[in-house]
Length: 91
Image (tube, rainbow, N blue to C red; front, side, top):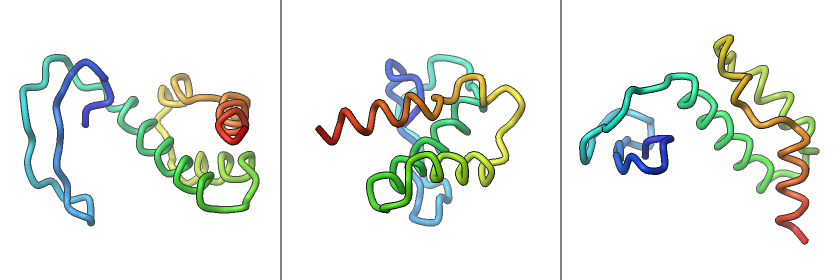
């Protein structure tokens, strides 16, 4: 799925993340930084929900592993946003 919610484009990939097909038309310019951030957020979410490691440690480790572009951190949620979201979700 495109990171723009209104777009409606779906990209189908294999389990190895190889491109398979695309559905619908992309109605806007691509933003590679948003794609980078989405992949990083998805990895963090998966780890936060499946591990007992602290959210802060997961966040720090994934930021280092991601090797984000210079612009991507500006749109990345902060650790405070992650902690607030996941603590509220558990209550």
